[in-house]
Length: 108
Image 1: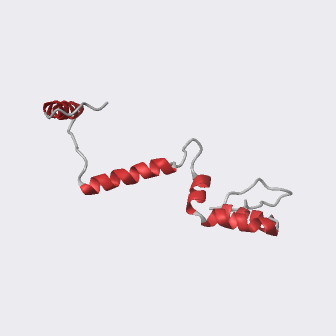
Image 2: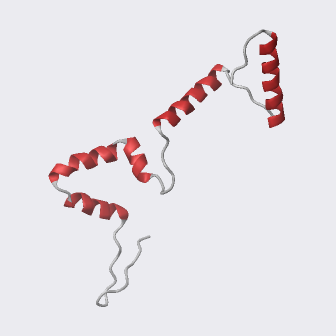
Image 3: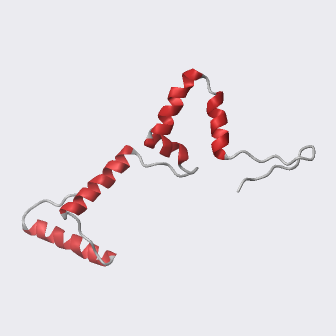
C-alpha cells in the first residue's frame, strides 16, 4: 500500500516507495561514485552495518571469532552443561580439589 501526501492543488500525489527513492538517489550520483555505492550494496558486511538498527552494533571480528570457537568446542564435545549455578560451582570446586591432589598449581 502506498502512502498519500495531502492534496496539492486539488490533486493527490502518491508518495514515492523506498525503491523509487533509491533509484532516484542512484540516478543523481556522479559516475565516479557509482562503484563505491555498488561495493556497499554488494558487500554483505557493509550492508549489515548500514541496516543495523540504531543502538545495535554488529558483531566485531573478535566476537565472531569467539562464537566460531565456541561452536567448534561444542562440536568437539569440549563443553559442560549444568542444570543450575550450584552444580557449576560444585564442579569447579571438584576440578580444583583434583588439581591440588595431583600437585598441579591452581590457575587464576
